[in-house]
Image 1 (cartoon, rainbow over the protein chains, first blue to last red):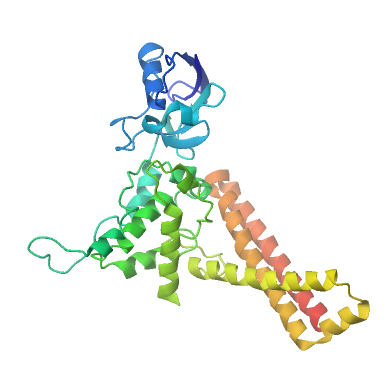
Image 2 (cartoon, each protein chain N blue to C red):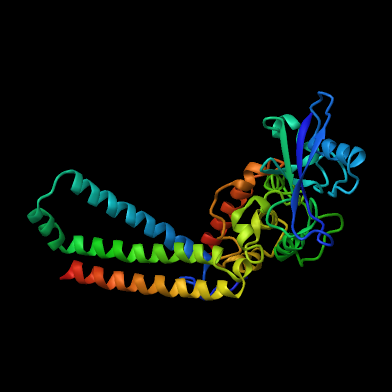
Length: 235
Length: 119
């Protein structure tokens, strides 16, 4: 029997959060962490609350902290997470908890909105589409795949301490996705908004974001590119 | 754009660059001093080393670098942990007090260093 410990908090009833222990029969299978949560919800306690949708690592809803490491519950097999037959599941760190494993992502989305994550080009649109060379298109690889699950930003201490001022790895990855886009013409305005001591430069390069990204992306590298662009612009 | 009036240069890029350049200067200085000390140095040799103008300039550069480097680093630590978000109103009071103590100490250290190096 797998020992599972889940963070429980219902602000309408509980004075403070607590951990609740469950025992789950996995039938000897290497289930995903989400399957374990589903088993608990179906068989033991229907009030256990978490977000989930696609259950295949595409929607980014079930970002959780599993045995101390952020990841998507639906694509994290028990064999990757469980140590000593024990699985501790907590909400993503640093964001306000709405209930149990569900966090309020408003701060995260506010930072995403700040980087204006959309193509800005005021020139008349061509008849069909704005074309890119294959080389220019290749620059967006490793950037556009982000699903905004918030695993990276909520594993970043700089984001924990300053979620209102530091854009965070997810937002900065998207910021660079548009800075690197040959069709986007707002490069100067985008860079001008980032040149303060908090938005980009709170990143100290500890790479927690790279360590947890379920899509294998590298926000630290993107942040390095933004820094280089700021340096070239100012030098 | 987040405003930050107490940072060294108000610009994240400039602070970041200063942090790196001063780190290189400090590394060069401490490696140089360590190599002298490890090589064995008498009082007279030490004295004549610091009598030379280039050494005075080098040591002054190191002192100024240390002050700038320490200010940027401590500013980062204070604005991480001593904030309204983490500690409520007390955070602002604590942060500004610590910033004052730090800046005052660094100014004193720099003046003291200038006195020692150029006397």
